[in-house]
Image 1 (cartoon, rainbow, N blue to C red):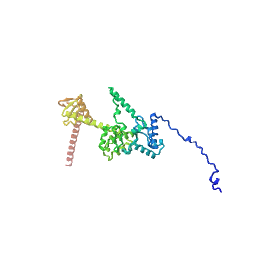
Image 2 (cartoon, rainbow, N blue to C red):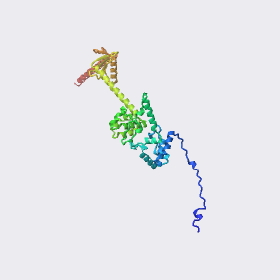
Image 3 (cartoon, one colour):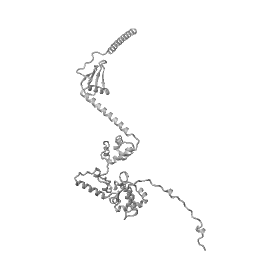
Image 4 (tube, rainbow, N blue to C red):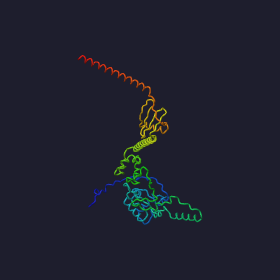
Length: 392
């Protein structure tokens, strides 16, 4: 009896052959030229005894990325890229990273939260022990170099002073970041001098680094923080949260520079007006109770309080008072010496011909009116007498 039939087991049906050309799915990597020192370091990392296979692969990837000029410096590569190069999963990579940390071959920055909600990068560094094992830095060369310098000093030749960059501590003396993020002495820091027009922001409780950050944000939005503060200082000083108020202003489509220019022009105009007013007051105060005459013979008399000037024209004999721009013009001309000082004021002897003619006409008209009224009153008196006799 046959328990497994061909029709049941499918032995009579040939299995389909999958002819897949897997070479079509392959993608050639981009060409990359590595230095001989880097190639030797990667080859040494794969032959280190005493660590796991994943740790060797991770160390080889780090050696491939490290800078030959500064092997203990930062390795600028994301974990995702390192995992893709080594073919590891993130969990495997972090296990290998932990193993390298325990062996003292690498150090990793502590990732802490910086200001404004950002995180610091947890950079990876190769230690001196790792660079010596990988051949990136050789103590023999340093010892040979030091021996040569000692011999040169013994021969009496002046020693060459080290460059300025060597005087600063290098990344080899690096320690882990602290929670308060205190910067190292050799790190580039922001300038601690604020612009003169932004120092008043310190009175609102804003720190220096925050002000520099706001300056950068303002520049990204096409503004200047100085213009924004100058244009809105009255409202900004009354704001409960100045930082939030400034951030809202930076996103506004307002030409703060034009507002500042208009405000500056207005302030300059007001300042010039005040200066002119003070100048006029000082000139008139010095010429109080004095009389002056111009080239046409017009008389100018400065009153005792020095607040006004009485002007008497020669032709019309009309007295007027100078005010406003006329008073300022008189003060400027007086300061320039355009008027002569008069000791005694002599009124004009006679008026103009036109005024004399008008006076004669007015006198004759007055005499005619008086005569007419006299005749009318006499006629009325005669009529009243006639009527009285007739009634009698």
